[in-house]
Amino acid sequence: MADGVRAGIRAHAILAFDGPDPSRRAATRERHIAAIGEFAADGTLLLGLPLHTPEGRSRGSLMVVSAADETDVGAYLAREPFAVERVWGEIACRPIWIPALPFRPWPTEQAALPSGRGHTILIAEGALGVERLWQWAEAGTLCFAAETLDVPGGILVGRHASDEAAREWLVADPVLDTCRWTLHATMFRPLPYRRLPGMR
Image (cartoon, rainbow, N blue to C red; front, top):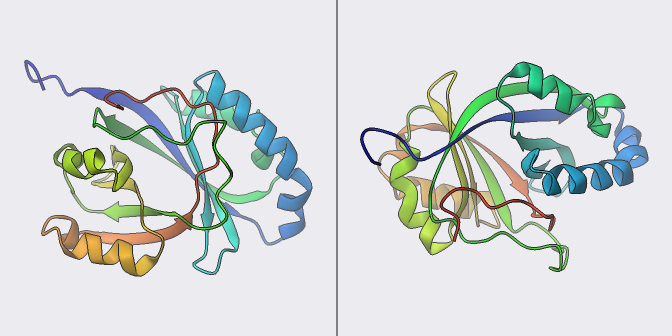
């Protein structure tokens, strides 16, 4: 940080949960995959991950979009097949700040699609100080971190293949351990994402 300016970018995180009809996701999946590839390539989509249950069932999506305000978020949702076709039954939008941390590069388009869960989305209620997590980003444990700007909290993505492993990591940090956490299993689909500030 220089002259009191925090290095990073502002964006919006969309937490979307599927409606009661799973056939909508199946019918729209291929259009969604094609669309998020385009959104990642043009810089609209900074990160897109599925929300899974520990058993691997789809429950929704986390979409981090380059949007200055809710008008921009609305423009994105108007192009997103899962929103247009009402795959998502519940959509919450959160303004976030993504610090410039030394994240390791994410899987490229040439990488193989993961066979199962390799990561965990961790959503915090409470102040966690995302900037101080740089050592976990550098080590590769932390793949993404953002501070929520509407209420104290944050959104992390860690390289944890189970809820138990994720919670062990949280308990080991005295600050993270004070927050209230919601965990979602996930997996990285290789997409042509643009690099985040600080990414190695």
